[in-house]
Length: 67
Length: 140
Figure 1 (cartoon, rainbow over the protein chains, first blue to last red):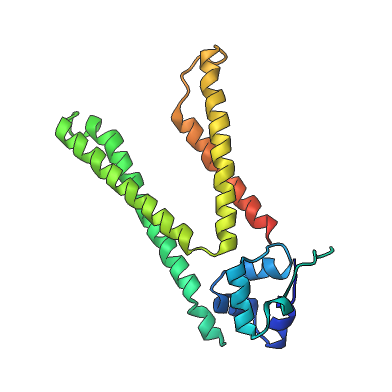
Figure 2: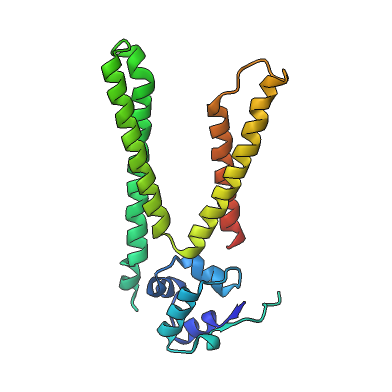
């Protein structure tokens, strides 16, 4: 699953640690999600959407990431 | 969000507290296990009452350690939980397969000694450790 987490985080000048704290997960989890190695659960995806004040589909895309 | 906020991350704080609790209860459990194993022979000459009390204390501490482990797992985020659950699944499978085969070795006279449960526990610990490391590398 593709996502714009890294871009959105950079736009707000947040570190991975700061985003992790806001979403109450580990920094490693944020890193794995940004790299497309781990797909977040629906509750975590909604939490991210609320944090960025965006619709969930503006952050996460069902399309498989090509490496 | 400031750096100071990060340092006071509730996730990290909770996680650290759960880790410390699990570590402490594991250490207490190991100590009570050692007392239950060696004290009857070396300290109170197999006094039945003392031995039973020690065993009951060991069991109670063991259950408290399980509760601490449950709290630790529940406190982790979803990716960390997945890594540990996957590692546990591998460990359970390896433990079952290796354990039964190991037990069979003596029955079919391929080894002369009686299989020890401690050997199986060592295999399970090493499997768990390897699986956790592999899990972390997978999501790195």
